[in-house]
Image 1 (cartoon, one colour):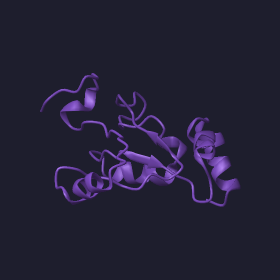
Image 2 (cartoon, rainbow, N blue to C red; image 1 turned 90 degrees about the vertical axis):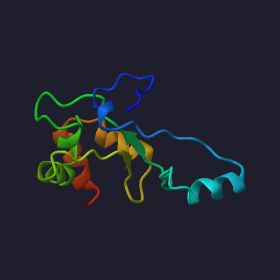
Image 3 (cartoon, rainbow, N blue to C red; image 1 turned 180 degrees about the vertical axis):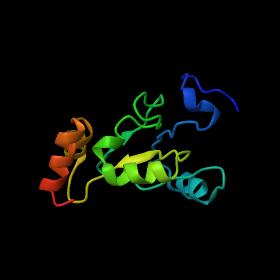
Image 4 (cartoon, rainbow, N blue to C red; image 1 turned 135 degrees about the horizontal axis):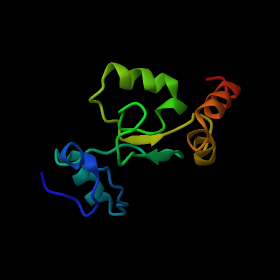
Length: 116
């Protein structure tokens, strides 16, 4: 596999998702129809991608303790790499950062306050 300019330890497995703005509608349609690309809608969340394996639990995401409902999935599928946007329904990127940037205990408390 070709290396990217960054030196991620997971490069042999996954090249990190990149974001590109496309303003030309014809080009957008062409990309949506192409099998060479995968895309999804951008919500008002935050993207989290770990560049190393956790020294605590061996999982490729350092913030899994902040979202225990996802942590269960990672434990069931230890080779799964989830690369995407962390989003809170009826929230914004600041709400996401307030959870993902907190300690696991505080993150869980904030999610419970929101009804999750």
